[in-house]
Image 1 (tube, helix red, strand yellow):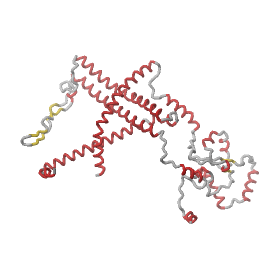
Image 2 (image 1 turned 90 degrees about the vertical axis):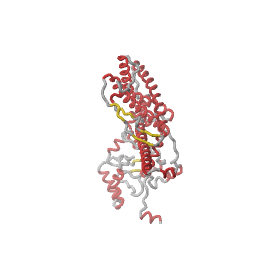
Image 3 (image 1 turned 180 degrees about the vertical axis):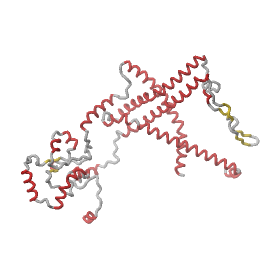
Image 4 (image 1 turned 120 degrees about the vertical axis):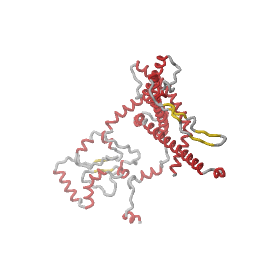
Length: 196
Length: 235
């Protein structure tokens, strides 16, 4: 019943507005006809000048150029972290190789603290997490692992500590020439954030 | 008013209720048509977005005035491109009528007459004796309209057969384009206000500051569910 009254009210309102709407539409129709004639002659002039009345304006061409330039760089887009907290150099999180101790309950990075736990990085951290919880990864085990690394002749540069800045986005990483080399290595924890 | 209504017979009251229902039904139908027009205009306006989105995304245009100027310019070009076909149809129809008049040397030709005009293919009724109200006896009589003309083709009316449908189709198509133009104009007005709007309604500087200070403590975008462990810690 309420909807019926609403419909009746709307009908009454539209009937009252109808003359004004018709007035506006007829005004626009006349204006449209004038503009149509103007654009028609303009297109004829442009035709003889070797051009055409194109819907693509100068602004569109400029925008197209900008977008074309941006496409190769934005294959993996990362949202700009405008709302991310500013961090000092001392607060940078030090991420070590796969043997690193990563706390279970504490967030591993400021990004994780701000934007939540990344599922993929979480998956990568799982084996480490288990070791930490079970307590099997003691100092002795760490020494044994270090010996394994030495015996496998892995260069010491590869297991050096990587310093990761929370301000660094994946977009920056993609521009970095060393990124591909670093990503190919099996050692190290990949803490790139893929989902934001 | 009330005594007058009480004097009415049962059939008069029924007639009054029937008229009231028809009145309501007319308003409901008008309301539905109006609602449909509003929805169609919104849909037509939305089509502008795909034309102007690139310059906004790429930040080629960064202020309201420039955007409005650019969008209106584009709007008129879109209208010109869309209105070409209906205008051509109307022009051709007009030329056909002029040619017919030139051939017959008859420039006082009524395209809607029922002898050699478009009305030859229409049903025509005489509505003059439909309602009869006798002022002396106050008697009201209702008669069905009388059919005066049945549709048939006339060779002489060929000009009107081409002119009237052509103008009707072209005119309605042109009005559709004009309606799109109005819809886009309204959309431009709305977008120019919303795109460059600096709204501080939902901004709280203190909240932002507190969030940045507590960044390492807890995730901002995740709600902490009260578990039993947490409750015990709180206690």
